[in-house]
Amino acid sequence: MATKTANVLARVEPEIKNQAEAVLSQLGIPASIVINMLYKQIILTKSIPFSISIPPKPLAKDEMSKEEFHAMLQKGFQEAKAGKGILAKEYFENLK
Image 1: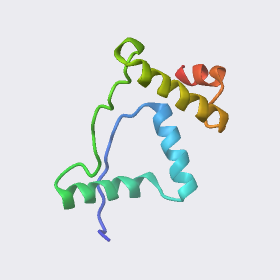
Image 2 (image 1 turned 30 degrees about the horizontal axis):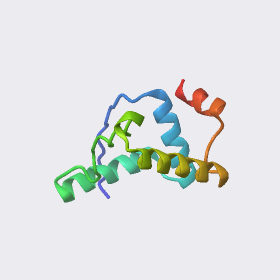
Image 3 (image 1 turned 120 degrees about the vertical axis):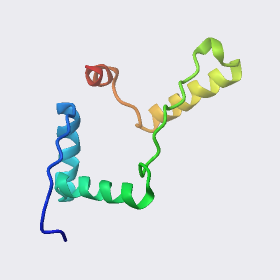
Image 4 (image 1 turned 30 degrees about the vertical axis):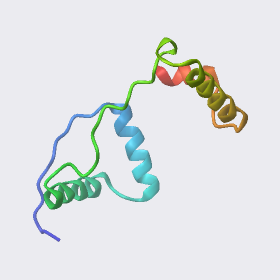
């Protein structure tokens, strides 16, 4: 391991930082180690080592066929029955 270090200064949203550091704390990995790992992967791959893309926008109801719309509703219903959903109140609180 190198005996010298350099500082990296980055501005991030406080909540994003807190959430990421909570995960890293559970894993027992300091943020500096993760940043060093990221930089090493950038060097090795000569790229950003993960996909960066804009997720596809969900179709609006008027852009779907009747079958697609009913399939989407059925999927949501099955997920709700399986307990995979969250309460609307919790969802809207998370939007804040």
